Image (cartoon, rainbow over all chains, first blue to last red; front, top):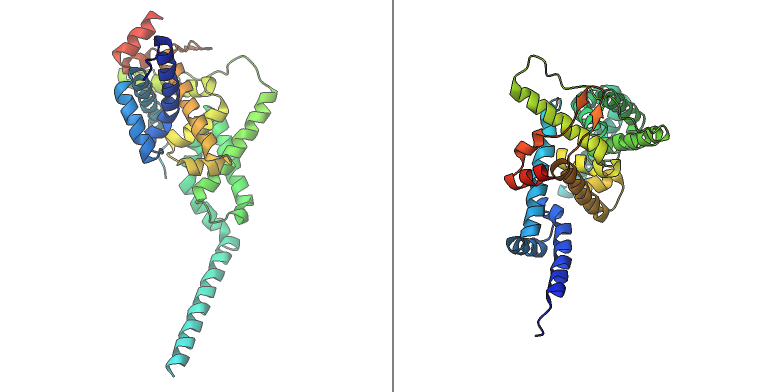
Length: 75
Length: 226
């Protein structure tokens, strides 16, 4: 197989990352199908940038949920 | 003989069912008010909280919550049991919120509305930090996340509606809900963690420093550099 140049490798990685990053929210909400779920997990293991994207999104979710503490209780 | 008994049994069952259905209908027409009062008590806090999270303004949230119930009472006969009552009520509330947007966008102004400073006098330090953090979250949602994204974010992350329920409430396809939710979360995160909000109100300066303590060390370093 022909070896890709550095630029092309980066481009290929970029396209992959764009795809997986668009799936991250669904993955967090467990709304992806099983196949995608496994693919996202595999990608998160190897890609530092996407893992970071995932971790910061989880963090901001925890932050936004703090608004619940200021709510009036139900009932 | 057995056949006759069976027919008789079936007829009495059908009559019973018919009476029950009739009772259910009369519940909506005659005892509707009582029934509605009960629902009002159950759901009022939920609708008020939802409106507060969407508008970030207590007075407006109170008005919109009341309007929601007035509208719901008028349209009670339109309620079909295909969705839950809460979903139906949320749909009315969100529509009112959207109309409010139209009204307020006519009088749009660059000047930020005055937001009351958290009640920090004579309170323990932790309480102040918590209140300020909540103030910052509300402020970020209100001024840095556009309303069409905010709706989805609040419904999903604060009220745990499923994608399908949100698509019913907003009358949009699930695919669009997915895209909006992802963008909303990214917008909120970028404002809150990567960026620094420096919005002034009359008596309060928001620099979102409180949030930095919650972030991972790498994020903190990145922020303090920039």
